Image 1 (cartoon, one colour):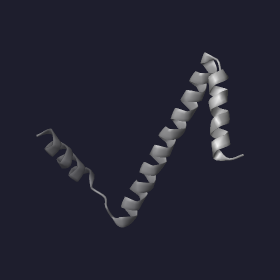
Image 2 (cartoon, one colour):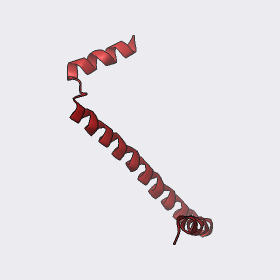
Image 3 (tube, helix red, strand yellow):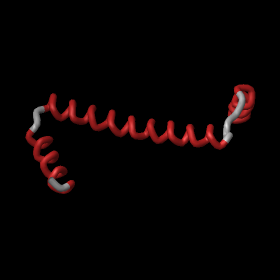
Image 4 (tube, helix red, strand yellow):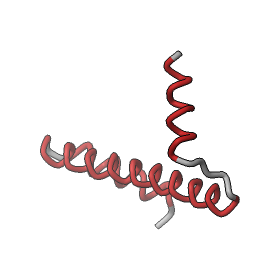
Length: 69
């Protein structure tokens, strides 16, 4: 089944679903996209660590203090 066919079938399922199903599907899809974002952030952080782009705790505290000014 192609992506277009899957999307159409999902639209049909959602359109025919009751309130509970639609809410559950929404929650599941939202959780999926949140996890994708977290995974991307973790991968970027791991690249920073491998590259040596890290800060000591005291440096971070100073940076945050400067934001408040």
